[in-house]
Length: 238
Image: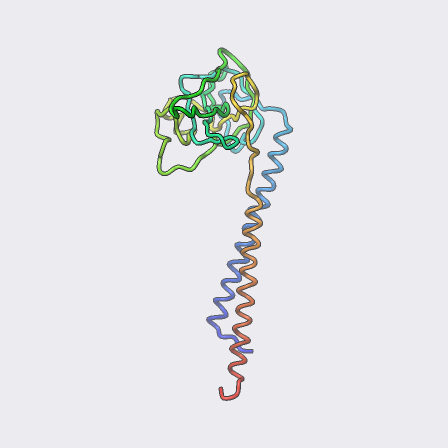
């Protein structure tokens, strides 16, 4: 059975690339599994105190944290299109002035939309004075799909998304690099039934098997084409 050089090299290239992509997806899945294990470990660890001292996101994300200070209610932002149990609503995001002078953004919880007037915010309570809150450090206050800047323009009360660095520049507040997803209850009537963080490891395993399946298919096609060509060469009259 004779192999033609260029088709054989093309088939070999496809096999090598798809096998390598499969291993890459496997490695990504292993990394995410390690992250999930760390998240579980963080959930059962003592809450870390947050102060004005800057904390890098990579060192604090997914950790349980606690902070003492007071809410800055006049700089609140409402993140739109955040449904809960199929009901439209907002996330209430508010700066929190720490007792040593620093600031951190807090995703306080979910608030249902006023169905009669979407621009009207339903009433909720904000604790006055110094309080202690607990929560989970997250990279942002959740992200929703938007076209362009959409409702995320600066100085808008209702927005689609909120970037920590951009909001710090907008307000001039020395914010920490993360957002506290509040879990402690302070009687404000906000819903804090947060979805569990997911890493999508199942998708990586799915892509891994797809790439390796393509490698097997390419190899099988190459062997079939070579065998067919060989039979044609040895057929009577050729």
